[in-house]
Image 1 (cartoon, rainbow, N blue to C red):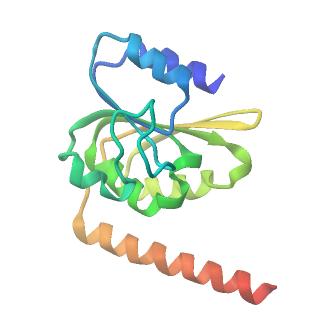
Image 2 (image 1 turned 45 degrees about the horizontal axis):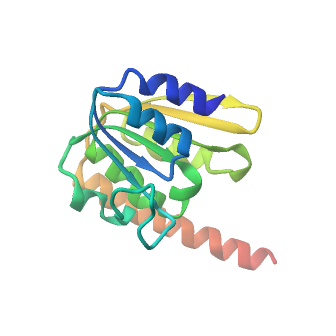
Length: 171
């Protein structure tokens, strides 16, 4: 059902699309849409070239590969992005012009973390839950501030360190 909602939205896309770790059904629907000028699929988990991916880009280097507000839509699978949240969130706000679609499995406990980190940028967020999956639709009208980004980057690193320490001490 979540993929069907994304595919339904893809029919309305016009412009450029960046896909990260997306399914084959979504890739096929992107290829069928003639209004999409540039469709770039990257794989976050593979270190080598994937047949379905046009280009291999490290998630930490999204900002280096795309200009500010250059990509109209971003579709991503949270399970592929979860290890690089602190890089992806700030860079996705920087390079995206319109809407970000992120989907995943509810069991992963990353939904609350994602919502908190995206709300820092004053964006409109809609969450759709279905049985064991979720879809986050982020209407991006947020603005980046370098000082704010560095502050939250250091803050997230410190919070991750504290979380690891508490896990070790609780065992």
